[in-house]
Image 1 (cartoon, rainbow, N blue to C red):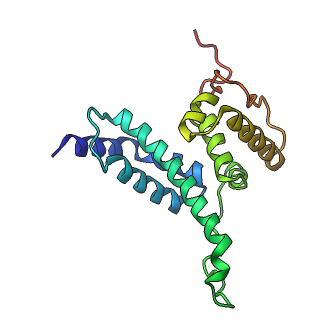
Image 2: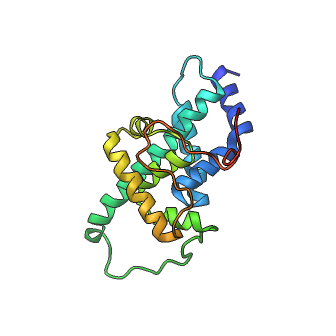
Image 3: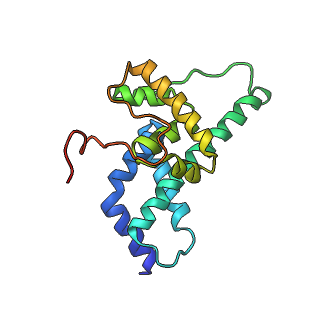
Length: 186
């Protein structure tokens, strides 16, 4: 077995649940999250990368999840603009309906546009700084700040005022995670 196969198997064996959770936060749909992880694994391991460890591979896969989600959203938006040219007069109703989200935060995240949602997830789930988010998504820091501000405003409208909400324009300080919040770290 080659080194990339060993790395991929180790990554899937040890971090699959974390990758699925991350993908779910990005897209808000458990089935779509599985597809995103699968597509990201294929994209990450489709070409050989020298010295790729499971830790590095996980960061590649996370980046690919976000990129694939945003790309799919863009394609969907383009299709919505032209689909009326291809559809018959009457469409059958959706038999399955929408998958209901299980939490208020998931519901609030679902209301955000894809890039705003990606920025919010990268900032508050991955604890990335504004410059890191800008590099990860290939957008300017000012745009990231605007997306974070818009996202937090929409989240507060959906969830109510957030206690101890961090400022979206904090450039370098990661947000306290729930595990360390309120504890003194020496």
